[in-house]
Length: 270
Ligand SMILES: NC(=O)c1ccc[n+]([C@@H]2O[C@H](COP(=O)([O-])OP(=O)(O)OC[C@H]3O[C@@H](n4cnc5c(N)ncnc54)[C@H](OP(=O)(O)O)[C@@H]3O)[C@@H](O)[C@H]2O)c1
Image 1 (cartoon, rainbow, N blue to C red):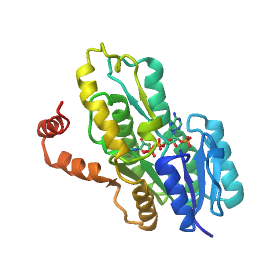
Image 2 (image 1 turned 90 degrees about the vertical axis):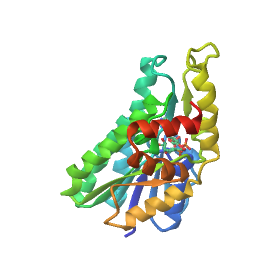
Image 3 (image 1 turned 45 degrees about the vertical axis):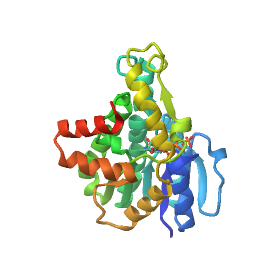
Image 4 (image 1 turned 60 degrees about the vertical axis):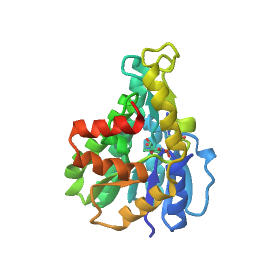
């Protein structure tokens, strides 16, 4: 029987491309989405309602999959968005929402899928983090820290789940040309006000980042990396994909924090 994969956040971008590609490889892919009607089903691709903020939709999706297949071999935690705001301007709801989707959402799905994998004494969990899970940038404190959290959860879960033969990995993408900058970057109104005390850094950084995302790598690279991780029991804990991640992550490892910060400041002119 083919491997059963559940991916969250599949109506666009990396989730969509990964679901389509992995289904074309013969995996049975459940493509989770808040709006499954946006996803075109095919022989191996089954859209399924799953909102990472709503436990009831998570449990019901997992129950549906288990009733049919009695297992979930692979979970890809992909759903996420980015909040662009200074810390000074943040409001409570914005703060909570960013973590509710990128961190608590991922934890909710793990919490529901892990018992299924533990019972089977087998499984692979792949967390789509970001190279910004290892590198900070201004205006992205909440997004950055949510992805740092994903990296931490990945490390902790690896210890927790290894005795049950469940592998946990993170993929740290650089900038990718998806709907992320077009639809899923949420901007704080005060931060983006022309009169903001932060107008200088906003005007220098925000358009460049949006441009870098929209001209970034193709999400197919992420799909190929997921396939590689599934097929290799000895795959490392984490991996970078995309040009920006491959440029900045090794630099971050080699340089002191201060030298790295200098290089980033030079690169973005901030
Ligand atoms: N693009 C980049 O440059 C980049 C770089 C590094 C990491 N990432 C990460 O890669 C993952 C996929 O992003 P992408 O680039 O493929 O972007 P995308 O095209 O915007 O897709 C993100 C998906 O996440 C789900 N999502 C977005 N906002 C949500 C919300 N408020 N509540 C619940 N679900 C939400 C949506 O799924 P549904 O509508 O189907 O529910 C959406 O299809 C994210 O975790 C992102 O942080 C992206």
